[in-house]
Image: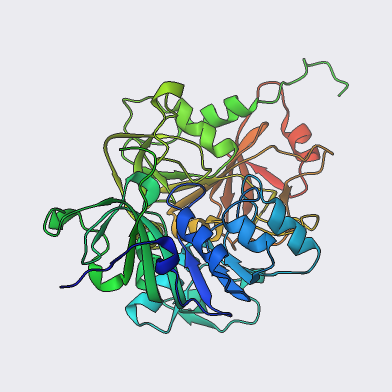
Length: 224
Length: 219
């Protein structure tokens, strides 16, 4: 019997290695896998590359992981969110690398990784600093920039419901980067608000099929 | 400014947003950038069905909820709580940007530091910032069918934001089609900025004197 549920967040992030590239879902406070991030803090892996839309808020969660000096590099589209104190401190001190990626290019680089496409051309960022050093080609009359797939070693995602096969559903704008990141990592770990019996999820509503998911941990909190 | 005519009164932020909102036709799919462009949604009447898109996976975004009706799972690209109109739907980030980059949005309205007479836009970084942040602006600029900018005509120091060439880092080349400022409405054409509207009491000469790039008056 397939059962991708693990008993604890610690078990869910077991085996993350130093130097790993970790994809972290969420957009602002919505859809962030907070319990998995805390578990990664406890787990101890260091020299991490974090791929996320934002670079942490306040001093908790992702910001705390940065604060503890465990992150070598951040790849994101918008490091300046509402309260990016920790990231700003590290960046000004030259203690963290930053790779700024346009939000759509970030999503597409992840999608490409999940879909086995090593690189793609896009007009986004052509003629800007973010295209510096990248191959440019004119395709269909438009100047395009070559962007490479962004593969994670681990993806940490949050979902609304999950079954033991790892099928996932999401809630409202909590979907954001989570489904695309789930496709793009060697090890995909989901924290789910709810547990569904196998067969209880309407197949039409499954956003992330279980083929992409390796481990699920039940983290009930907040709304029913 | 000395003269015999009464002094002209620049538009407020709300008035600029309302002015841009007037020009959005029913049926358009529209993305509004964070900051002043977000205000535009407040001035589109509910019965004129304009469908607002948010980068984080929403089509049919509605206004901010009453404080006791906040759904904490539902935020817009600026991370503010919003609502979903009947007919609205959700999708993930890759689909959201497929809509943007695939040319499916009729309009994006952004703020800007500078717009050049060739349609170049600079709106994501100034030299003074510690860490740059681009978000979805570069994708929106190249993907939306129309790109409008809503911004003050000049900086607080009085420098023109409509320029011959942008001095700040570019967001995208040659993509702005129209600009709404607190002084005027301008089209970006192959011949440069063309003024289609000015606030009452402002002369073309006065507008030109506050603008770095040369202006033409629409016939």
